[in-house]
Amino acid sequence: MFDSLSERLQGTIKRLRGQARLTEDNIKDALREVRMALLEADVALPVVRELIERVRERALGQEVMKSLAPGQVLVKVVNDELVHVMGEANEGLRLNVQPPALILMAGLQGSGKTTTVGKLARFLKERQNKSVMVVSCDVYRPAAIKQLETLAGEVGADFFPSSPEQDPVAIAQAARDEAKRRFRDVLIVDTAGRLHIDAEMMAEIKRLHAAIEPVETLFVVDSMTGQDAANTARAFDEALPLTGVVLTKTDGDARGGAALSVRHITGKPIKFMGVGEKSAALEPFHPERVASRILGMGDVLSLVEEASRQVDQEKAAKLASKIKKGKGFDLEDLRDQLMQMQKLGGVGALVDKLPGLGSGMSAKMADAAAGDAGDREMRRMVAIINSMTPKERRNPDLIKGSRKRRIADGSGTQVQDVNRVLKQHFQMGKMMKQFSKGGGMQRLMRAMKGRLPGGGMPF
Image (cartoon, rainbow, N blue to C red; front, side, top):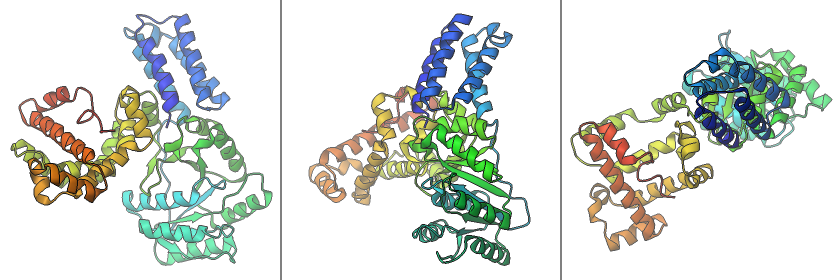
C-alpha cells in the first residue's frame, strides 16, 4: 500500500532535507510535487487542497524557517498533516454496553464484508477476549450464508443459522435473542451488498438498523476503488448513522487514496484495515503509523505488537541461549526462523513496517516482496529443510551429492535450490557467531551491511 505515493513523497522530502535553508521558491516546488503525488494516488481533490494549504502555512512559518534543520522539520510538518487528514488516532469499537454488543456491517457488493466479519470475529476473540456470534442476513447471494458458516468455524466464533427464505430483520432479531440467551459479548450482523442508488435495498438496511439498534455500524469499502470509496461511504452515511469505516484489500492498493480521503469526506473514522486474505489479516487503523509508513519511517510499533503475539517466546529464548553458548545455528533453527517470519505476514509485511526498507531496498527485492516471491521462497526453503533427516538438519556438513538429490526430489525442487538453502544457512550461521561475541549487535549489523540475512531472501 502507498508504494507510488511513498516513493514520490520521500524523493521530494529527501531533496529538501539537503537544503541549508528553505525559501518560498523551493517550498513551492516541493509542494507542487507533493500535490501531484497525492493526485496520482487518487486522493480526493478537496483533501489534496486542504492538506497542501496546511503544509504551506506551517512550512512558511517560524517553526520551519528558523529551524537549524528545516528539511527535517518539514518532514514532521508533512507527517503531522497526513495524520490530521486521516483522523489523529485510532478509534476502537464501543463495546462497553449491555451484552450482546451489536455490530452491523454494510457496504457495496464485492467489498469484502463477509470476509471482514470473519476477520473481525477473530480479532475480538483473540485480542479482546470476547465471545462472538455471527449471523448472515444476506438472503440474496446463495453462497453467502454458507461462506460465513465456514469462516465462523475457522475463527472459532458461534454461527447463528439462517436461510434465503427468511426476512433479514427477523433473522437479525432472532440472532440477537439467541446471543443474549447464550451470554455472548458481541453479535456481528452481516448484510447483503447493495448499491447506494438501490432505493429498495437501502430501505431494507434502514429497517434492519432500526430493528436491532447496533452500537456500531461499520461501512466496509474496497480501498482499491480510490476516492470513489470516500464518495460511496458518504452516500451510505446519508442513509445510515455510520460509526466507522473498514478499508479492505489495502495490501493490493498501491496508491492509498482511499485511506487519505475517507475520513475527510465522511467525517467517520477508519477503524480497521484488511491487509491480506488470511483471517488474521485485520489491523486497527492507526493514522500516525500509516503516515509513518508513507514517509518511509516504517511502523515498528505494529511490528513489535505483532511479534509479541505471534513469535514463540520460548523458542526465541532457547535459540538466544544456544547461540550465546556457541553451540551453532543448525537447519532446524533456520526453519523455525522462517516459520516465525511467515507468522508475521511474510517478507512483504516486514518490508512495509521496517524503517527505510520500504523505499531503500533494491528494486528487485521490492518487486519480489510485492509479488509474494519472497513468501514463496520461504515456503520452498521450509519444504527443503523438512525433506532432510533430523540428523542432516543438525549436521549440515553431512549433506553431499546423493543426499542433495534425495532432498531435492523429496521437496519437489532442484539441487541448486538445496545448495541455496545451505548457503543461506552458512551465512546466517556466520552472522550468529558475530552476534555471540562481545558487542554482538554492532558486529551483526556490520556483517549484514544493511541487508536481510544472507544478502536478502534468495530471489
